[in-house]
Length: 428
Image (cartoon, rainbow, N blue to C red; front, side):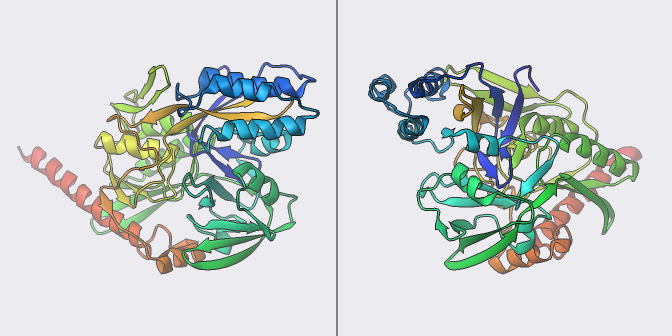
């Protein structure tokens, strides 16, 4: 938390509720006052991009010429100005730098209490295809219960094609009053599926945990679904409780976790790491802000982290820090690959602007944007297995879950090795 607002960490993805999760997003309000002239809003957007955009070449766009082009126009109303702003930003070829009209801006505001209204999916726009893609459904929400899966492509919303539609417009169409319905048509592989979902108020408890018995090991299983404001507090309580129960090691499940608050991911990393770097950010001036562990880890017991293609941004910050510091073994599949930082600002007329202002690097200096993090142990799920786990969430985190079963094997080996080392030390 800074004096200026909240720092968020995750993908530039929008919940189909009044929320956005995005890696390194800094939410702040512009000090600009309401301006009667629509042209002033165009210039305000241009100025913010000019001062803060991560790439000083503006992706090889003559940004000063762009200003002349759009300020030489006449605007009879704000809608015309909004259209020009979107055209102007499109030249940057950056899906994460985007303009939101007042309605869209209200739709993406984060409710840090952890309560959302919607169907419970995170959306992102594929940078190459421009298609709307599900990053992950939130657990125990209408979307998750209906069987919507990560990487589903949204083709239509209530019959309206999403061709050329941005995330903010999709969010506006998907959300609505509690109890009302929305129909999503998705493409999964080559199959077209239709989901009729009832919107609901969703209270999110991001941490769930249990103790599980394995051969020669008492395992603490923790599932973290989102890096919300209360995630670090819930994670601390989970680890402390599991430590009192004398678990031998941990499996931390970050699958389908789209991210959330950046400081939450840093705080949680410090619970597992006693020493070492966690993440660094670099802006266009090359300035680096590096976050480190503070020697206050809650446990040093063996740790395995589960990741997949729905593990994004804040999840990648945490898993990258644990992997680079040799604190954990990552099991699963390649993560999402979002390593950019956005600043989200309110503009003078109630509209908003998200601007890519920096990139983040793992402790080893790896830029994971568009690449993701490769797990140490790769295990893919078949479409059938994914759908089965989606239909029966009680199987997630059990030996009926192939990725969890593999993580359990890896962890028990690490626990046995640690016990062997301790036994050897005690006999000397």
